[in-house]
Length: 228
Image (cartoon, rainbow, N blue to C red; front, side):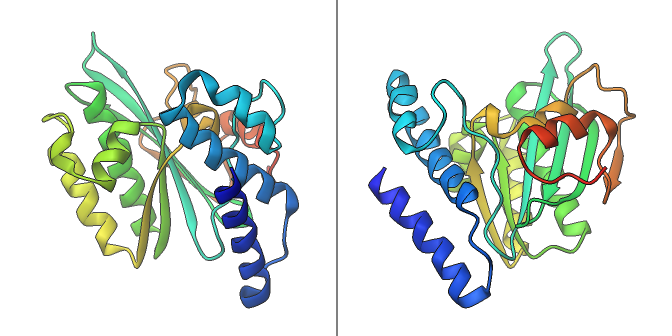
């Protein structure tokens, strides 16, 4: 907790001094809470909720999405998969350092397993970010397996997902700066909403500047600005 607190306070002050980015105290607190919560979710299990309360998170509430550092674009991705149909849906949402909506997309994907469709979500996220011309990106997913493979060794992933993860890694290296980030589902709700089979919007559609109606409520629940 001390390390993450000092790190995010230092980053906020650095951005203010050198990049003239106004410090948003709420975003700093959320960044600390999410960083600690994500770390504890992996390493501490049942102790997570107790310790989150010490870093400003409302007791009983899960971490929320928070903006990327200045100049970065955060690309949140998620996927759903049906074993019966061997297919699923991929959702991609892009937002900037001011938490403004940039773009979103929804795709229908055929895949042999859940790990493969999660990898496809990251691939679609990289492709959309590159198409829109962004150079510094954070790819964020709630698939711990996929993010771990990209951060460490792709060979540790399931064999069905390895070919796609290899393509994702290559696309990531084409960006000027690309980071892989795992988040809990509660901090990835916008992308998650696009993967629902009940989503009314068509598949293989990209929304730019204005989000689809099904996303407005979710984006507003992040507590961040959403033009609509």
